[in-house]
View 1 (spheres, rainbow, N blue to C red):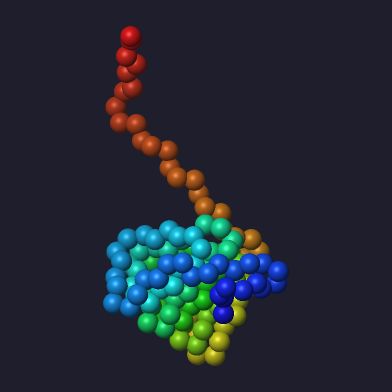
View 2 (cartoon, one colour; view 1 turned 135 degrees about the horizontal axis):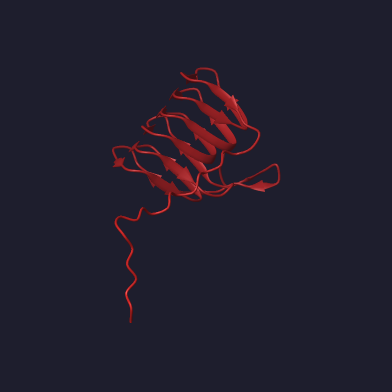
Length: 142
């Protein structure tokens, strides 16, 4: 599992955020470092940086898309998973969606109801749409 150690010469992020059992967050989550989830997220989860780690405990659940560099999943994800570096599906992992991975470790008992898609490089994010201008733009003269 990921933790406060070095793997293959790369430093791995420590858990810096905990969402505890009994907590439900409705909305999208963006994080850096390490996120340990024992509660429920009704929304997407994303992280920037190659050292970001999502750890989803056996009690945790995500109802939305997951886009992270590294993840350890032992709970339920109802949505697609995009992992740019390393994905570990532990024995109690339940995924209802497609899994995009670069390196995958899957334990006996883990279940995926979707496609397993190997990717050679992390998925690229589309730039945010430009703000829409409503009505004519009138320049004021000074």
